[in-house]
Length: 228
Length: 228
DNA sequence: CCCGATTGTAACATAACCGTCGCAACAAAA
DNA sequence: TTTTGTTGCGACGGTTATGTTACAATCGGG
Image 1 (spheres, chains in turn yellow, brown, purple, blue):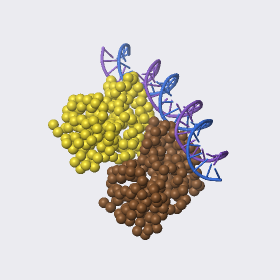
Image 2 (cartoon, helix red, strand yellow):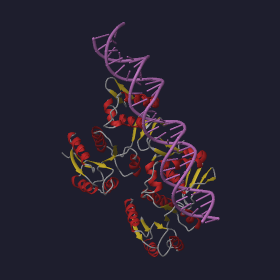
Image 3 (cartoon, protein in one colour):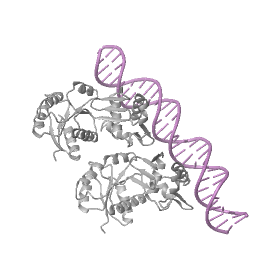
Image 4 (tube, each protein chain N blue to C red):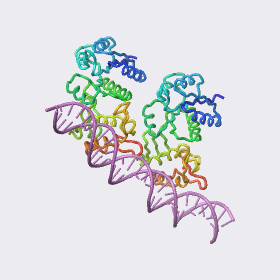
């Protein structure tokens, strides 16, 4: 099928894991282990999506992304950036290099596949570097690490912020506690699922009347609803 | 496009790096490695901007700048000075030699491109009186290397000044410590991120009540806010 | 050559955040 | 209604991030 995805990373383990996950999700995976090969294969296969590690030998991931966007042949291909540290996210966004989304390591394969599908849905309609989530009066700007409700800033901790974003990105669909644990806390976290409850509670508290967006689905988990 | 930039430096590495960065940013780069060639190429290409290293063989960078400003053909071209040490900034400014801005080594390419765009924006509008950043009662004049709060001068060291300018130029957006390190201290600085905290503290101390502009975003970094 | 200013780092203090627990409130099943 | 399981809530220590202070090294000016 034409659903080819290009994966660029210098670690073979990551490549294998991603290729496996993507093939399982119905994509065709092509891999590259450095920037030069990435640019070459991007032109060659014209994938529908590129997953690009920030840290690459020789040519930086940022540079690769810029060159992809500068080439008319590959400019329209959505790019998902992989970053090792959450702190680098701001840097990426600030550079305005044209990445369409980012995922921080460690990530869950499930999360990545969801992002991919989200990106491709978005690309089908209006492609935009959507770093802003908005539901009703609730506005979340990922680039600024800032959430606003009715225009007023909501002071959230880093964990609460990521939890809110995760829920909003999958709005309408129930998220189990285990899934939230792996997606917010990372795939290797060994924690009590009740911890999620506590953070949901704190999040609701700070959200005030916007807390009604966060629904409890008894026996399953939580859901962010936009149809109040 | 006519966006030609002349780069003058005696080190080939610096020339390469700058030319690369500028071309990525959409400029056309012309280089010169000494003062005589610089004057020649300035008259020849009539660039929209000149990046001029202070230390040059044979003819001093200061002398080059003076001659550029004395020649009617090149007098109107904005000049950005490159200096190895922040302390020399005062010297440049004191000499009133006509430079429009300065950047201290080591610098980040990102920073330089930002300065260039700023300079060119300014040149498009009014005559060069030095770029002034203004938020509330806080005024910062980059060209004069001067900061004022409620009209009273704030005595800042070179590092503190650069930190303040960097934060103000990206007002509203969180700046991680790593990013501030690369933008204020240079692209190859290997320093403790806690150093940033210390300098932020010193800056806040000197700013007095204007310190509220400098916000801490726990777990992320610092942010200069104008929406208090 | 000496002295003050500046700077980066380390050490300590403090505040914020996080994960867990126990219990009460609640809902679904029996 | 009773029973059983689930979730909300508040609180408690442990951990981490940041504020604060102090100090040695460096640099430049006098």
